[in-house]
Length: 253
Image (cartoon, rainbow, N blue to C red; front, side, top):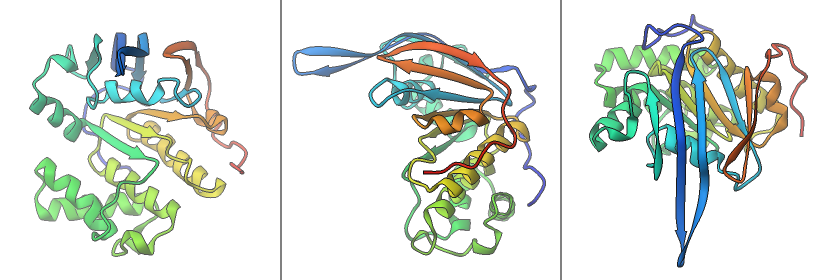
């Protein structure tokens, strides 16, 4: 594997990358409103893997959506990088924040069926303004880093689930993001591929300096975390810092 890609920032490990205070989010159902986030405070640091854990419907995915500029909270503020309040920015600047500073990894991979692995990664870099030659080199380096060097010309239909998720991780890493948001990144994978994916997220934090925020209901992933936050019914129940186990037992189903 290649040396880690360049970081997109000069932030130091352990510095706060994102800090939210008093987040409230309500959804209307018929004549009533359901409060999915109930005055939640949250922060995450560069170099840390922060696991946000909780049962289905606990508010964990809504929390990540409000932190990443995808879903506006009804109350509260999100201080991120140099922005004092993300949600006070114009929609165009919020879009630019996501493009320049965030990597996203989803359960469903979100790959384009017609594009090769290299083209998937290059497309994200083109949107950032990278030249074709720079995008090609960075895409190749990112794919090699996640072990997909031999398959850069394969399309999603020719890849396994684990390989598709590695391409998605390469697409996120190639942008050298400050923040990586992973929503149930291992739930569609078997134990072996799930372990590969979570190890790559661990490296993104440790070697790239990203703040990795991973939403999951899978307790097996706790071993890889610097911090585990449990959320239930829209409230944070506990917030525990821990020392990640760099050689945890294999994931198994």
